[in-house]
Amino acid sequence: MDTVFEEMYEKYHQDIFNFLFYMVKNREQAEDLVQEVYIKVLRSYKHFEGKSSEKTWLFSIAKHVAIDFFRKQKSWRRRIIEKFDWGARQLQDPTPLPEEMAIQNEEVQLMYRCLDKCTMDQRLVIVLRFIQSLSIAETAEALGWTESKVKTTQHRALKVLKAEMEAEAAKGGMRREKIRVE
Image 1 (spheres, rainbow, N blue to C red):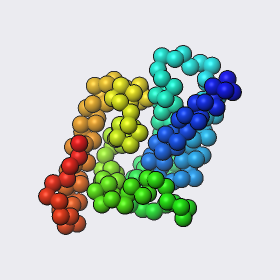
Image 2 (cartoon, helix red, strand yellow):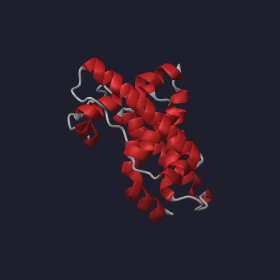
Image 3 (cartoon, rainbow, N blue to C red):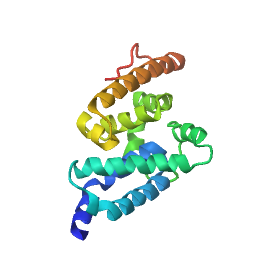
Image 4 (tube, helix red, strand yellow):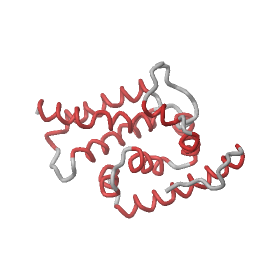
C-alpha cells in the first residue's frame, strides 16, 4: 500500500492541490485540505474497487472535502461568496504561484472575477473541465454525476460566465468587442 500511495501522491498531488486552491483560494487552507484528502485516501483505499480511475476517485474525495470545509464554516453561504472573490490577493507568499502568473492576463483575471456569479456546481465543473483538464466522463465520475448533467452544467456555467464577462468588460471599458468563452 505504501508504494501505491506514494505513486498516487506523486502523480496527482499537484492536481489535487490546484483544484482545492481554486475552490478555497487560500494556499494554506488548500494545503490543509490536501492533507485531509490523503488521510481519507489512506483510510479508504482498501475499499477502492477500481470502478473509476484513481484520478477521478481522488477528485471525488477532494470535492467532498471542499464541500465539507464550506459547510463547517460559520454562515457558509456568506463565506462561499467571500472565498470566491477571485480578485482579492489572499496569498502572502512573495513567490507567485503559476496560477497567479496566469491571472495577470486581463481576460483571465476578468473570468476569475466573474466566476463568483456561477453556482457551486458550475464552479466545480469549470475548474475540473478547464483548469484541471478532465474530460466530461472524468468530471462526471469525480462529481458522481451523469455526463449529461456535466454537459448541462458546463453549458449553463459558460453562458453565465460569458454574460458576466461581457457586462464587466462593458463597465470596465475593455477594448474587446466580444469576450470569447469556449
